[in-house]
Amino acid sequence: MTDRMLNERLDALICEADSAKFSAFAEALTCKDFRRACVILSDYTLPSITDENVFWHAFVFLCRCNAKAFLVTSLKAVRRLYLNGKLTFHSDILAEYAAEVARNDLNIDRQKFLTFVLPFIRTGKEINYLWRIFSLDDTKTRIHYLIQSNTPAVYYCIFREAGKMVGESAYLEKLCAALIRKNDALAFNLVSIMQSYYGIASHDWKFSLTIQPYQLAYLDKSEANFRKVLTSV
Image (cartoon, rainbow, N blue to C red; front, side, top):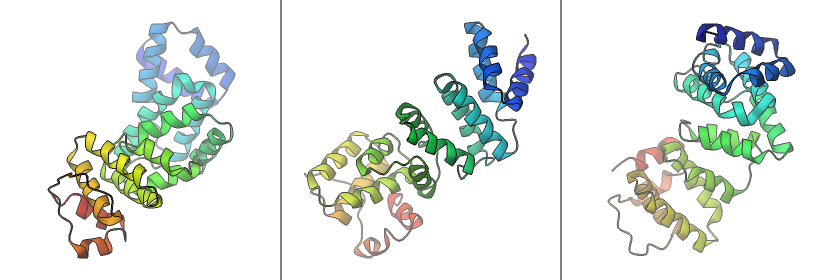
């Protein structure tokens, strides 16, 4: 079966949305052809879907068929479409899927989803939306996911989450130490910001970012204000 034929077959099966039939087709493939099918799904079949609702329906269909096999494959298409401005996360279909994941304690699926998308999400607002639809309310768990990435949006969310932990100085000091170990210029700036804003002990950490008192006054007013300070050095 050529790549074109395989793409057409995959597209037809996804449109038909018969999980038994799709699973039977996938299971009949050799290991080599199955890997090829996954590449075609992530690079051609799914990215060719132009309607956002149709895409998320296809995404959920594949995950329900076999999340272990198709979740990351589908997320690769999510990344491609999102970065090209052709997809958003604000979808009732995705929200229903996320609620299903949370309700059924599918923690591995949630972990895979969040770990994959957090490095490329553009705004803190979108990250907070994902927390909500996946019912992820615990601050330390959120920070655990966030600290694995290093974008301004992620660092803004870490800053806001850290504000909920101002009574746990030992935890905040450990968080700052973990950020420093990332050896990332923006992470250093974030630690400097949190030290100034939340009064975290410095442990003789030295940073090039100097925050003026007037900057502290508007730092948490908006993500744009935070980014301006974060990236000022």
